[in-house]
Each structure stands twice: as structure tokens, then as C-alpha cells.
Length: 291
Image (cartoon, rainbow, N blue to C red; front, side, top):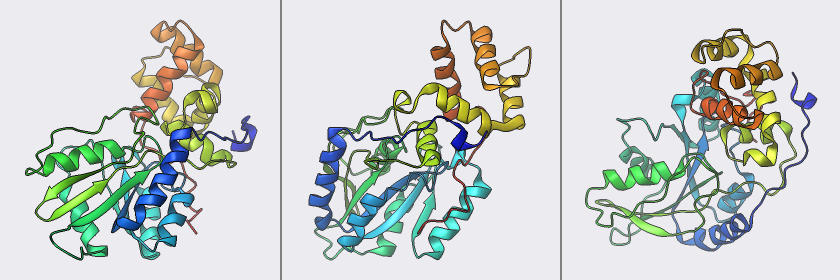
């Protein structure tokens, strides 16, 4: 099923805290040295916020790009985007913030390759940002853990729901070398007119399911999974019959898990897709390279 065959209308979901977050980013960015942009490796193009990037360029700030959730993407496709970003002069690093063993100090090292602090006593000031639910809070918490000299044990709240960080605050993430991080809320574009972008962001949970529509997301997912992905679902869910249509897939899940409604079945399917249960996918059309 082609994207344009799915009932998609323009998404204008820009809650008040996102508007305030944009204003705070504009106010604070002049005081920072490096912007740490977090994207989701499954949607390395759709999770790019041009409005934030315009602010970064206006203030002539350096930027590094973290492509998070690399363990859930199609690495061959996402690597093409990473190489394209590097060819454009960006520092881009694929990471999996929930995977043990990743050296989070490499983020600090990368920041210093694009910008050195002016004064050791002041340290390097970074701002981290990205669209909702790209895993920014997990990155922040891991940075705090690896900084053994950091005395404040308070951590940023993490959740798999978009729009849980609703403030902008600065805190020390490392003492030697001295580094500070300014947080910002997940911010979308005020208007999303591209069906591919809207559905991709909806599938990874950057946009609330109710905004895009659960049925539209599952319908889109069925097309993305293809025969191989549906076969994986068939085996993992221990279904008696392989689903042939999206409605058939929902009905099979209702039957297999005794779901009380179609809505609950859709929740189950979307949750498992986001956890990588059906395979590793990069949703963006990779040949659409970034301007």
C-alpha cells in the first residue's frame, strides 16, 4: 500500500510547552558552545527538526548528531544517511542509549572535536535537543552515570511517551574535563504536511497515537512489514494463520491475546514494533538526502 493511499491529513500538534521550549532554546543557545542533536536511527531524516537547525545556524553554533536506537534500525540504510551527513561536514555518531557497554564519554570527546571551551574554569556548555521520544532522557541519564564526580543524583525522568520533558535546565555532567549540559523538551515541527514524515514519526512514538490515528499507523505498519515482517509476527505471536490483510492481522491479534477491543490490539502491535519485536527497520526513504 502506498503512503498516499492511507488517509493522512496535515498534523498540527504543537502543544504550549513545545512553543515555550522553542523560545527557551532561542534564549539560551547564545550561551552554549555545542548543540547535541538527537535523532532516531529508524527515522534519521524524519526526526530532523529544521526549525531548531535554523536557530543553530543563525547563532553560528557547532552541532553533533547522535543517531539513537541504532540497535533497532536497518543499519545498511541508516549508515547511508550517516555517511551523507558526514559528507556534508557534520559529526554523526550512531548510538544505542539502552545498550550496555556504550562509551558515553565519546559524546564529550566528540563535542570537543568541533568546539573547545574558551576557559577551563567555565567548561564546555552543550545543549541537547530533538523530537519527542528519540531517547534523549536516556542519553542524559547515562552521561550522568559515567560522570563519577557528579554529586547531584537527581536524574531526568524517562518514559516511552512523547512530551515528558517540559523544562529547560542546565546541569554539570562531568568535572574533568568540566562540561555542562542544557536540556530541552522534545519539539516537533508546528506543521507536518508530509504523509511519510507524519506516519514515520507516529510509528516510533514521537507523535501521540491518537493524533495520527492507531488504525492508520497499523495500516502503514502492515505495508512496511511486508511478507517477511508479517512472517516474523506470525511466529512471535504464535498465530494459527498468517495475516493476509491489515484487518486480518488485527483480528488475529485480538484472537491470540484475547484483546477486549481493536484499540487494545493496535496498542499491542505498535508497542511490539517499537521494541523491535518484528525486526529492524529504517522507515525513511533513504535516497531523500538532507538539504
